[in-house]
Length: 313
View 1 (tube, rainbow, N blue to C red):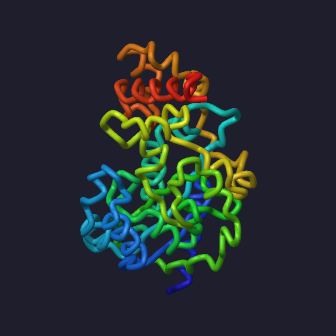
View 2 (view 1 turned 180 degrees about the vertical axis):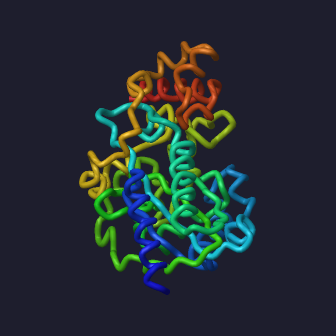
């Protein structure tokens, strides 16, 4: 690789950091065989629960050429989000601006910078987690972080409270090496903190027992067992995040555009049950939690109140 191309690579990385990403790395757009095998094992074992959409797009996950013809490089980025200032019933990532929009806009700005910096035509595609890409696999390959025992990517110095994104490019950029870093070692704090046993083994999540899956992804009504497992959460769960020592180190380093919405931070199950459709849309507007819908929010609220009742104590 020429000195000019190396300089361009570092200019791109610096631009990504200037935009607010806490880490950016580069990978060659080849197959991610290890990550794909783990993904297929999850599907084969049914650990994805009723998230049927995860069964689609396998070809694109295996071959990014299907997402961007001629793709040669993948830039992986991590954007840090703030730890909740106080406990709430909604996960900290869902009381701020929708990361799909924020990460997508920042990646689009980075692509425009690359086109100007290269001085030539560059085709690219920005991806957030709604695209069929192996996000943690690319972040691992690009040296952005390492996947921890809680199955989340851990970025050095920032922890796992990070949103991931990818920029597919049809130009060659020298890849970075994966990190030679054991992020978890003998720590098992996340496994011990999970109240439902969803972390069946280090790096192995069974979504069917995960509070985040139950309160966000599950479309139907709860069984009695599922209702009891939600532990008062209205949307998501932060238990494994709160337990991770890396997240204590990363606290206070969030992207400045993420301002928690206090009305959501303080929302109770009782208040959720009183919401009308228009009140729900106004309250959750612009956040990732809007997609939950009022019906499922009230389902979660009823479960939360049932878990608080004297008969459950």
